[in-house]
Length: 405
Image (cartoon, rainbow, N blue to C red; front, side):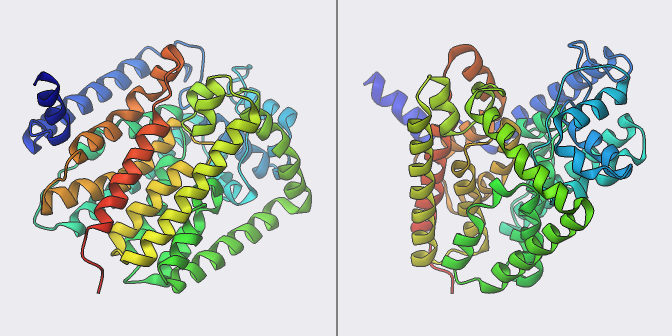
C-alpha cells in the first residue's frame, strides 16, 4: 500500500503545480545571484579564491583571440603558444585551458581580446545569456500564447549559471538552436543558415541533418549546409591551411583528454564518460556510446518521418537526441535541454501532463545542479539515464499527438 502511494506520488506529481514551481525558481534564482555576488566579491584582481580566473574556460577563448589579433591565429592549437598567451593575461600561470574548437569558432572569438579580459568576459556572458533567455521566452510564448511563463523559471535554470561560472559558450549554442527552431517553418532558409552556425561546436549538430532530412525540410537542410560550409571557409581565410592542419593535429590532445581523463569523466555527462568513470575499457565505452547514438538517431528519424511533428515537437526531439549522441558533453551543455524541457512543460500545461512527465521534467531541470557532484563524490553518473528517459518522454508525447497538417 505504501509502495503504491509512493509510486503514485512520483508518477502523477500532483504536488508539483505552477505556483509551487515559481516559488522554488524564485528562491533558486536569488540563491544563484547572491552566491555569484559573494564569489565575485571575495575575488581579487579577477582571480577567485581557488586561484583560478573568473570565467575559467573563457581564458581559452580570450587567449586564442590574442593570438589571432596579433597575426598568429594558427597558434591557437599549439598548446605551448596558447599557454604563453594565457599566462600573459594575468602575468602568471593559473592553469591551462585547451582550445579544441574548429577554425570557424575562432571567428567568433577573434574580437574578444580587443578589450580587457574582465570587460570582455562580462560582454560575452551578458550578450550570449540575454540572447538565449530572450529567445527561450519567445520559444515558450509561441507554443502557448495564453499560458504565462515569466523570466524567473528561465533565469533559475541551473545550467545557465553553470555556463556563466565557466565562462562558456552553451548560451550561444542554445541561442543558435532556438533561433533556427523558431524560424524553421516560417523562414526555412534563414533557419537553416542559423542552424548551420553550430559548426562552431560540431558535436552538437550531429542529429541536425538526419532529423531535417527525415522530416522533409530540405530548405533548412540546404541553408544549414551552405552556412556551415561558408563559416568553415571563412575560418580557413582567418587561420590558413597551417591553422587547419594545427587544428587537426590538436585532435590527438582532444582525444587524449577524453580517453585518458585529462578532464575528469565525472565532469562529463555522456554514456561514454559514465562508463569510463566506472573504469570500463575504451572499447566498451566507445561501443556503448556508438550504439546509443545510432539507436537515438534511427528512432528520432523514424518518429519524425512517421508522426510529422510540428516545429516545436521536431525541435524538442532533435535537441533531446543531440544530448545523447556525443561522448564529449559537459554539464554546461545541458543548457540545451531547456528547449525540449520547455516544449514538454508547455505541452503539459496546454493539454495536461501524462504519467511521469512532471517528475522527469523536474529531474531534468535539477540535473545540472547535481550531476557533477554525484559523479565526483558518489561515482553515480545519472545524466545518461535521465536523458534517455527524457528522450523517451519527448518521443512518447510526439507519437500520441495529432500529426501536423
